[in-house]
Amino acid sequence: MPQPLAPAIVILAAGKGTRMRSDTHKVLHPVGGRPMLLHLLETAAALAPVRTVVVVGDRAEQVAAVVKPLGCETVVQEPQLGTGHAVLQAEPLLRGHEGPILVLFGDVPLVRAETLAALLAAVSAAAPIAVLGFRPAEPGAYGRILTDADGRILRMVEARDASPEELAVPLCNAGMMAMASPLLWRLLHQVGNANAAGEYYLPDIVMLARAEGLDATVVEAREDELLGVNSRADLARVEAAFQARRRREVMEAGVTLVAPETVFLAHDTRFGRDCVVEPFVVFGPGVSLGDRVVVHAHSHLEGATLGDGCAVGPFARLRPGTVLEAGARVGNFVETKKARLGAGAKANHLTYLGDAEVGQGANIGAGTITCNYDGFDKFRTVIGKGAFIGSNSALVAPVSVGAGAIVGAGSVITRDVPADALAVARGRQEAHAGWAARFRAGKAGKAD
Image 1: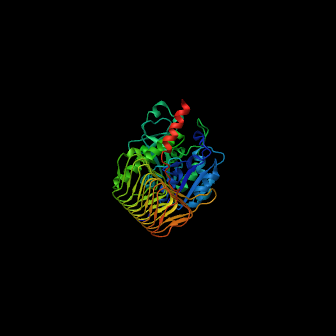
Image 2: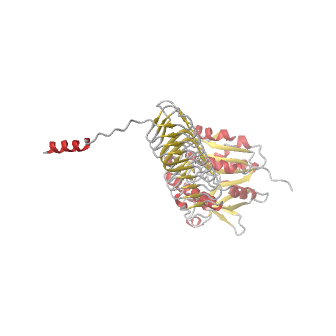
Image 3: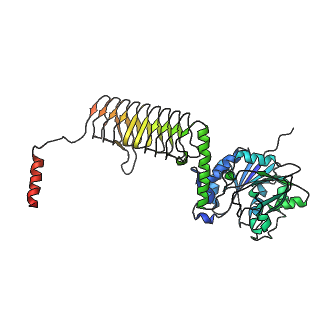
């Protein structure tokens, strides 16, 4: 049996997105910490397409800058005259393609690769067009799909052009389609714009195919895969759907989310086995956790790598470049940035560690800060294995504290501390007997 031909993919991303009221193109707004268009491109890549063409228009340069490094090609739709007209802009690039063509929408980022594979598989000689459909709870302005008893499409109609009877049909058009390549271009050139919007609709090729005796079929998907973004409210709904999906995935993989609905994950958050995440934790992009890591409540992690058995928080902030080796501990109200804590090192309270390296087993006392910035440049602090930094100390970088050294509480360290030394840098304490009593008496006399 011959292998099916690899698809080409056309992604429509030319719309103005005016309801977003943003200087950023709609498809570049993030979902799970990544532009929604990149979610779709990752899904599309799983289908091993021979070419991916993104149709751009408004703010084309923004979209092109994101997709071209991924090997995608772009074509400009100007003016924007509907979905059929948009797909037609890709014809010069794809006319020689022999496999099926899959048309996707850049503002529908959550569709699954399995769903798109099923859509492609439905394209056959008998039914050379396959349409993705769904049954939304609120059909509203979605186009309707009318089928016969065998599931063949009889009619597709936009909501604004539909009769009351057609609007009562629950099966809706998600907009995505797969079809045989030569047929697509021939039919698109026949599409007219005699409709309420005066646009050239891609779904009209279904009726043109039927007029030639060709069938079209529908593949149904779940509504949560097909949520589109036209407004900030839509973006919030898509984010919520993404988070619900990712939470299910990580819990099925063996992660405990104590209060799942309060934990926010990025698209690339990675967990080892038996991790525990307490309520109100936010993972930004670039976080990887080893096995048995505990993240306590109200912590924020981004661009951080945590080894096995680490503990973070509560109320901790790990910024990009943070690395915690096995068993390290970052406690409450501690912030790290470009900091590496060796195995078993601890910074339990009220500390800032920036541009720092903390050796294995070192202890960072409460209130300690690395003074890494002089207003112009950043400098590094190195704390050796087993060192002990007393509470409320300031380490003025560039500076190093040797292995096993102790820094006395309240010190401001501006010079390197040798290994196993004690460094104390603070004013000498003096006590003046009776001074406080005389001070109070003098104040009381003035009040009289």
